[in-house]
Image (cartoon, helix red, strand yellow):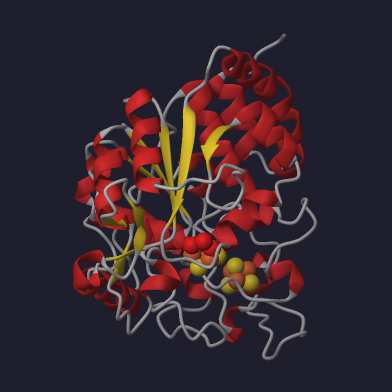
Length: 353
Ligand code: FSX
Ligand code: SF4
């Protein structure tokens, strides 16, 4: 079996043809992962916090590879609250047992934000064998000590997302507020693309930790700005803007947040590589950005901070994940993120860069 090198894997994932190329990627990757599985690849324990279940639904919509291949040949999914057929009486004990048996090598996947109000009592994950109610926070902290790899799936788990939107009475937070940041890999998106989830897990199994950006996102999927690869970029550069939905032109005036958000949606495409938001005449809502959704709303109104074609030459510099903003208005926008505590300090990740 011919194996894919790490370089080839990344090249295929990042190429503009990745949406189609991903199917080629998986041929050797599946073979390797299958061999790993035969030798006992690390189990994946998946738990859910405050979320809409959209991230799991997105995973189930994986096309290349399909979900059967994902479950049987790529991921050793040991527990998932919605997919697993096991009935678990004392879930906290069950998960801690599995974690202890695979100490240091299992992958913990967390979907959804973590409610911290009321000492975590907004989310009781189950009872232990003594009948004690265990909060999600308690379980997470214990599981987190037993592994080096925690994958935050979705914007809620990564940065708080919709679950932490104002007024956030449950005081939901992303994983990084509770767990040692160096262990966490963020896969934001509301929901994330299935390739981002499966690709990250496959990368962990085949090659180890992927390279991350300043916000803990795998660069292989999140290094580019949506705006820079958008098929409507020519319209933007020529100041041709749609003033209402359905009109020809760049969607900036009807609220597009593509100049802020990172991801490969324009080239990877969604739903079996058939389309993506802007192709469907809907503006990007910036769902992969740490500021989503409070600071990317209203979704269908132009953000005053985003300037017109004058920013073309510095478009990448205004991306939230790439450093200091150049537009004065945008700097205010970003400062708001830091002061409100929605975005973790960048230097918390600098050691890994
Ligand atoms: Fe959050 Fe996931 Fe958005 Fe929903 O479960 S990232 S609300 S799509 O599904 O956590
Ligand atoms: Fe595309 Fe939106 Fe950028 Fe316009 S503002 S070019 S629609 S990403």
